[in-house]
Amino acid sequence: MEETSDRLNPTTDTSGIAPEFDPKTMRSTKPGLKRLFITTSVLFSFLLGVPFLWKSVEIYRSPLPFHDIDSLSDQIESTPLQFPCNFHAVFVGFESKDPDKLRSQIQDGINQLTHQSSQCGSCNFSISVTVQNQADQCSETLAYNPSMCSYRCGVIKRNEFGVGLDDTVDESLNDVFSGCSENSGKTYSVVVVNKENANGEDEVIKAVVGKRRHAWVVGSGLEESYGDIVARVSEIFVKVFMNGGRDEESIHGEFMPVGSDGKIVLSFSLLNSNPRDWVYDWDFQRIDDALLAPVTKALAPIANISVESQVLYHTPKSSFSSWDEKLQSYIFRTSDLPFFVNSNEWHLDTSAGASGRSKILQFVVYIPSGKECPLLLQLPNGEISKTNGFISPMWGGVIVWNPENCDKDSESPSRNTISPQDLEQIVEIFLGQFRQLFGFKSEAIYTSGLGTYKILPSERGFTEWELDVLSRKHTCFNLHSCSTTLGSLSRLVRSLPRMIIKDEIGEQVKYSLKAAKLAQSNASLGGYSSSASSSREARSLAENAFFHPSIMSVSYFSYEHCFAVYSPFFLPVVAHIVFAALREWKGYRQEKAKYLTWLTRKKTA
Image (tube, rainbow, N blue to C red):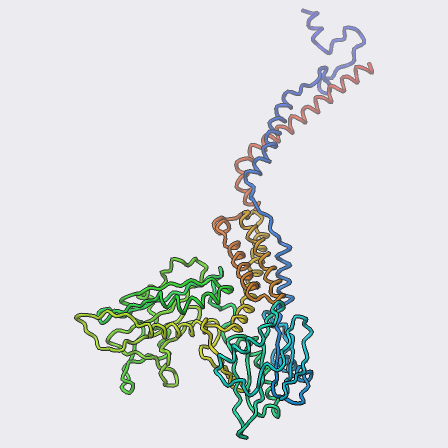
């Protein structure tokens, strides 16, 4: 027992040369790694799970072209989009007039009317002037545009010009300028004819704007007052062909009745106020094919238009009418118009073909009951409205249609169908209201300080130069709206790092930018219809990306919120494991230091 005790006791010196052993600072055996290994293994297992946890809460974000979005916005703001326009003035029957001087005067007049401002949708114009004398000899000055066509001298005869109907003159001018190239913009022409005055009396100057892209001014003695004629030519180019003959206070681009998806639904409703008195129906399909189809086709580059119709019953109006003994009819005044539409009884918003962002324009034919028939609209000046209707901007229009016979039979209400002639007149009034909603005038006359211009109506509802104005204005508005929407989306995505961006949104943004650039390219080349169509697509894609369901239906939170949610589950366990690993590591280092001390003491001994 004594030998065993001496062998196991490290303080016993049996050989006489063993070093002095201090158990507080030394140990004779190498420290083990089992506890440290187990603790660090658990710690590393938690650390290896961090990437999987991060991947499980990761938000997928399709890359968006932020630089291209900012570039588009800066370009639209700094460089307003302009369309190439070619102006051609032809003076027939003028002697000793320098075309260069006339061109300079016309350009000065245009600059004065436009104030030399470069607004979006305006014309980057070039001017050509041709002077044809009485002997049918011409002198001309062409613009610096190589694609600008030249006038075929002698084609227009001053004594024969304007003799026939205005529609015939318009078609003849279209034949004269039919060879003009439109690769670099539309060509607008104004022909001034100085006719011979056989009677010796001053002839009234006649100014007409055709339904194509031509206008003409006819009169006698125009050479003596050519200064006023030049001013008229400049006014036609600016006020009519560039601005569409619209007033400054007319409807602007942002209030045009076109949905953000580029669609318009024309909803026509026939309202029978009291079917106990009479019931009217209509053959709308025939009118749709004959009168409305050309309009929708003409406006196809600007908007995708669909037409629907319905017949409603028991639809009284909200306002009151009063009997006028002098007119022998019931009247309602313009002050009653805000209360005319009965939103509680008129169930008009029943369109199944319109999406949430499509624009629905309501056109209502109101047939009054027998108690208020005939019903007429009295204007503020006391006169009776010729159309017996009114419009509501961004909503539509209403027409009050009175039956020919207002005698009612309550016992057996009559069932009738509106005659094709009356229905055609109703649709023509609706087309005039539709033009007003787009900012144009319903009447075919434009009056200014220099005179009155007759405007030839088109069977499509809009003339070609009016369609050009709409294309230019809508292209600019659509591009501006596209850049604004994409810019808002870009700022929103950057402000929310954990916002889900699906591949579909990224593709819509990419295609929207592509369509916007294509619209700008087509506009610079003079492609009015193609630029309007591309800009409409760009705006629609931008709106689709911004209002994507994946964006609207998810609540987004920051990284701090994510940490606050998961830390109660993992932080207590991880903290204990980290502290245990640090404690084991510290203990291992201390025991290893004791062992090294023992080895050093043993070697020195």
